[in-house]
Length: 268
Image (tube, rainbow, N blue to C red; front, top):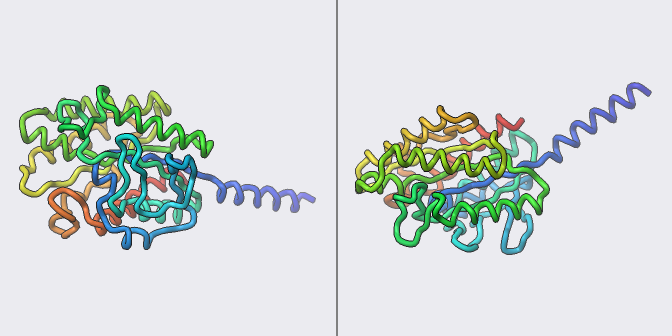
């Protein structure tokens, strides 16, 4: 009888592990949207990866182009980091994952860097509240807690620094403020995963270097904030750029694989 009970308990533990689920938000600007190639990204598709679709209010298998055009938030065009991220994450954890996307091309972190009608993640903008609304719908549908935010943003603020409209210290205030507003919604220990901003052709590197430095400093200043990918500054050399600012699918896949492995190790 004792052996039977131990066997049942063991099966329960395995079943519970396999049924465990995670919920992540991918947010930022156009590289978070994904400007790659879905033919190459979907090679990473797996049966443990899902996406919350707010237009249908449903959870569906994840496949690029991910995301939906909803309010100011934009879908992929066409490949993202998500198939590669979820493939690696689920292969390590053996657990399913549901992704929520909330990004907009050209959006700024600081209101001082806001460009035209691209909006901002700052308190005076609309993107934060829309991301919260979409995430809350996903939480209600899945009955899961948010396990972390993956942040891909900074090019707009880098250009504002180059143009003398923003200081690195002001970007730092905006980024810390954003993290704290997310944590006010989802808990003070909510992990915030930063993919460091890369370079842009025909633009001075100083603005992007300033953003990268702030992102690193914030990861050291705040608990549970992590730089999970720092190699975007090599993408021009590796020919992983689609154009002057957007990563191609090779770059996006490398980001997805690397971040999937790093984040998975925190959730085993």
